[in-house]
Image (cartoon, rainbow, N blue to C red):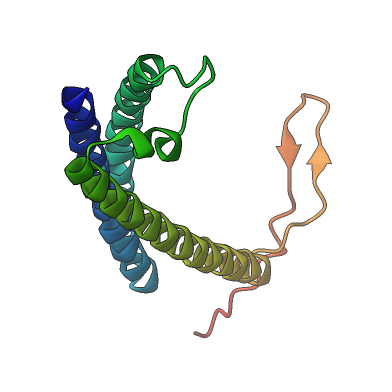
Length: 163
């Protein structure tokens, strides 16, 4: 039993570290968006995907440990939550698990806030790009040729030749 709670604590600690890393990456993403750093965004997105995959793998392991604890304490056949298993933890593990749970909850909230802000910035940037594109290169009436190709009149470009 104590070994299962030690495993659960270890898994939650690893998850907390990954979630903290995701918070840091979301903050870096915000700075990259503000600085218009496309190369930085690509590296950050790759790191986020890798951390998310690892977090998902750890979550599967955590659920297996919780299922074993559920069988041990006869808590039912349904998937049990950490809060349902927590009362059965030894005192020391109980305190650690509560602390990790609070930290995870805080970090997930921070990620949610940063992701919302990042999505707003991305939408704002895309709206600006769309506006600028329509100003510089408005979409003319599209003509479908008999061959199936699309042709657009080229005389609709609005570029200042004297600039």
